[in-house]
Image (cartoon, rainbow, N blue to C red; front, side, top):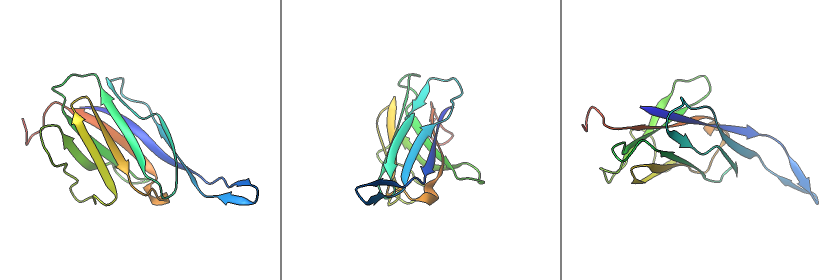
Amino acid sequence: MSIARLEICFLREMLTYQMFIYGTVIVLHSGGTDGSDVSQTSMLWTKKGQDATMNCSHTKGGSYYQMYWYRQLPGETMELVVFTSTARGEHDFGAFSKEKFSATKTEAERGTFTVKKVQPEDKGLYFCAVSQHSDTNP
């Protein structure tokens, strides 16, 4: 399995312009990868309440059609949010809500993951991983 990672950080910087105050700015940036052929969004800016969509792609070939999106909140272990595959019509969100997260996977080599209406509690690391097969789908 090859993995890339993305971190959601929050900047609490109040910007003023003509007496208007703008809210929290959310910065998403990637950490390092393991040197594999998997990459994901390197930096993304959004505001609290907006959606944050991350892209993941790889150059491992069409047989790597399964994509996993993980998240690790501060002080917690990494957990799988969604499993996607071009071989399945429905994505598997497990215990996670489709109201909060969405994903697309129309091609073997790329997919997207969205955190809807980003809030401060969404701060954490977000990882994309790809695999050629799984225990349940050889």
